[in-house]
Structures are given as C-alpha cells and as structure tokens.
Amino acid sequence: MYSPNNAPAADVSPVRLSYVAALRGIKPRAPRSPFTYAQVVSRDMQSFICLAASNPEGSFYGLMPDKEAALKAARYAELWQVSNVTFLAEDFANFSNALIALPLLNYLVCDQVGTSFAEAGKEAFYDLAAKKLAPNGLLSIRYRIAPAAGDVLNFLVGEFAPEMDVDQAKEFLQEIKDLGPLYFADHPLALASLERAIAQGLPDEFFSSVSTGEKPVSGTFNNMEALLTRGFTFVGDADVGANYMELVTPATAHDVLTACRDHLLYEPIKDFAIQRLERNDIWCRLPVEQSADAVELYGGFTYGITALREQVPAEITAHGKRIDLSMPPFDKLIDLMTTLPMGIGDFLNHPNGQGVNPADAVAAIHILVATGVARPMRSRYPGLVETQLSRPRWSVSFNRYLEAMSITSSRVLLASPIVGGVVSLSARDAFVIQAISRVGLDLSVSALLMELQRIVHDPALAAQVMDVVEPTPELARNIIQDVVGKSISRWYAYGLLAA
Image 1: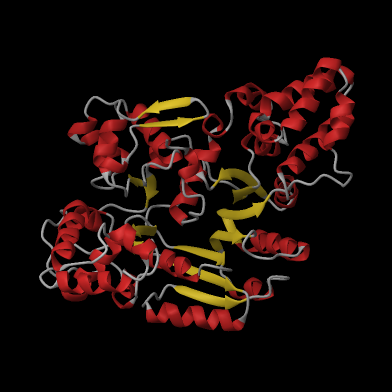
Image 2: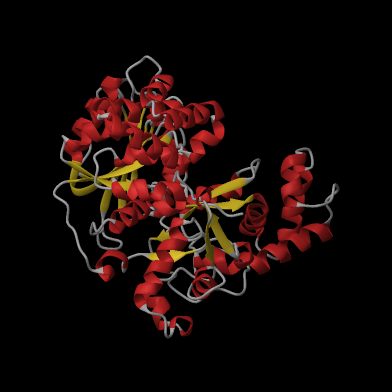
C-alpha cells in the first residue's frame, strides 16, 4: 500500500522549496537564474555537496560546527570538483561568522533535529534569517514539535480550555475526539477517559488527566512566535503531502480543521491530527511577491518520476481516501514522466495530453507530487535519449566519485542537474553504472564480477544485487543487461549521464 509518508521529507532542494511556495501563490525565481543558498550542515556533508553539484547556477554556503569540519568539507568539495560551494566554521550559539560572511540569501535551511541548538542558538538563527534572507527568500527549518504525542494534546488543552465556558468545553471534547483517532488508537486509556468525560459532561476531568503538570510547549507555536515577529509569513511543509489535509489526517478531523483553518493555532491543531512530532516548515521573508497565474507559478518547473514505470503504484490510499492512478490523466502523465521530465506545457502538447484540460493536468501533477510519486525538477533533458552505451560521460564531475568508491550500502547518491537535487540509486543499479563508467560497456562484465565477489562477504548487500551465492561471469552479464535495458534511458533523461 502506498502512502504519502513515503514522500522524501528530507528534500530541501531549491526546486522543492520554491514549488511548495508556489502552491501558496508565491512567485518562484526565474528558472535557472542565479541564487544563493545556505544550510546548517550538521550531519550529511556529502548530500549538501551533491546538492550544490546539481544546481550549477547556485552559490552554496555550508555552515559547519567547527573549523576542522569546514576544512574537511572543503577538501571533499575540491576532490569532487564542485566549485560553487563554500564552507564556513560557525558557532551555533551566535552565528557571528555567518552574519559577516554570508551574502544576501534566497534560501536558508536548518535541521534543528540533527543539530543540538540551545535556545540562544535558535534565537540567533532566527536573527540571522531576518538579516540575511532577501525579500521573497525562503527559510526551511526542521525541528521537533514536542517530546511526546501527549504533549501536543496537552498544549492544545492548555491553550483552549481555560478560556471556555462549560458548553464550549463539552464541544471541545468532541472536537478532540474527532481530531485524534490516530492518537487514541495508541492511547486506549486516554480514549476511555475522554469518552467518559463526554458521557458524563465533565470536561475538566479529562483536561486534568492529560496535564503533565508542566507548562505545555509546542515547537510549532514557538517558531510561529519567533518568525511572525521578524517579518516572515508561513508557507507550508517541505514534505509536500503534509500540506494536503485530506492526505495526512483522518476523515473525522476534516470538518474541525476546515473550521479553524484561519486560526492562529491551526498548525498545532493539525500536528495533533497527523500525530507527528517533527516538522519541516518553510517560511517566506516579507515582502512577498505573489501571483495568481498558474503558468507563472508552475510553468518554470518540470516534473518527473525517477522510478521505473512498473514500480509506480496503481493506486494510492491515505486515511480511507483512494486515488486511482490507472485513470486519465494520471496514467498518461505517469507514462511520460517515467520516461522524461516534462513541464505542464510539454504534456499538453504531447499526443498523451491531447484533449486534457490544462487545469486538470495541473491538479493531477500536484497530486502526484504530494503523494511522493513524482517530484518537481529543475530542468529538461537537452537531447534525445541515448540507446547505446559504450563509455559514458558523467553529467557533473561530482558523480565521478562513484568510480573510486567501494559500494557498501543499499543506496548510492548521485547529483542530477535535471532533477536539481540528489538522486538515490539502488545498489544493483549503482554497481552496474560504476562498472560501465570504470571500463566501458565492453569490459564491464569483469569489472562487475570483481565487485560481486567482494560483496559475497556482506550477505545483506549481496541479496539486494544478486539471487545466488556464488557470482559468475554469466550472472554479471545478465545483471548488466537487465539494468541497462531498464535504466539507461533514465540515466540520461535525469541527467546522471551527459548526452
């Protein structure tokens, strides 16, 4: 069963942040125009360098926890021949270096879950965002909402209950029940307490039962307080699906959420309905440049599906909602997007798009992106898809690192100037493209066989690549033929290899 939770929540590429902003009517920058992007890089240096390699028109700045980490990252960027990235040693308590060294930014990204920030550091980061983000610039922050799910409920009770009369409190009990099927499925004692309070008309008893005795907190509300007062407006969630109430919340919650959509606490209320403890918010620096023109908002993006056609689910289910992807225009869009990244206009001008209403095509693409089936992309493939492969050329020099590495994990990251972000290859695909890039197609069987013989000592990895214990030349040849037959077009179409 496919779920919106399969969507890659960690994607904070410029194209994804701009796409989410466009969903809220915020005009994106012109396609492939220069931009500046800074990120607090606390964990995955390779992914950040890969992101820079995927966006050659951007100037990237990585804020590292100390001088040693910054120098190490710079050495890797030089080794991988990625020249549009700079690393700064930073004190995450005050961000003093960034205040001096950073230019005016179009994007600023921070993962507060992966970085140990004291409260002073968070305030300093908000100040940095206010001073360094250009108007219409986008801020992305991943953070923890609360220590536990019960704390989210406790926060809502603490905010609403004290201001309610008895009748309002009784109504609030029913709203909590409607919002919380996911929470109460995991907390049957709390559900029993709630139902008893509803039946007896004693809301205070339930309110007391959820109280922890400490001041209720919500990271969502704290961020709102910090950023609304610093000249930002809320945009949405970097996990695109989380912006669609119908996809991420139970049906019983929809009426309550719709009624309070304009309430200041709408997002904390939605946190409880979704039962999430982490968020990845996007904010926009005022003043905001807005548009109601769909072409202006979405026409600069391309859209693609990096999975094979047979890997795309026939339907999507989410909280009882079913979306049939075998019906038009989904089927026609998927057929094209698993072959080449395309814009909305490309689809409408293609035979598959003939007769499709433009508004229906836009809506269908939004759903495919929201459910994680498709993703917004940076560019188009510049030529015809290759059908022969002798000695491939990498599209960006970063990807050459694969030739020298020993693959030890189930996924390998490559840069894509078409996608505008990181592309994750399966180990099976990665071993084949590595062998071909090392010695060319004609000699690739022996190169792959050598790697297969190496990984037999890692049964978990070997099982993802081959279905026998002892690799043979015939096995290596069959794997190459299978992978190349299925994936060669996609390697070119998504910019892993140069045309």
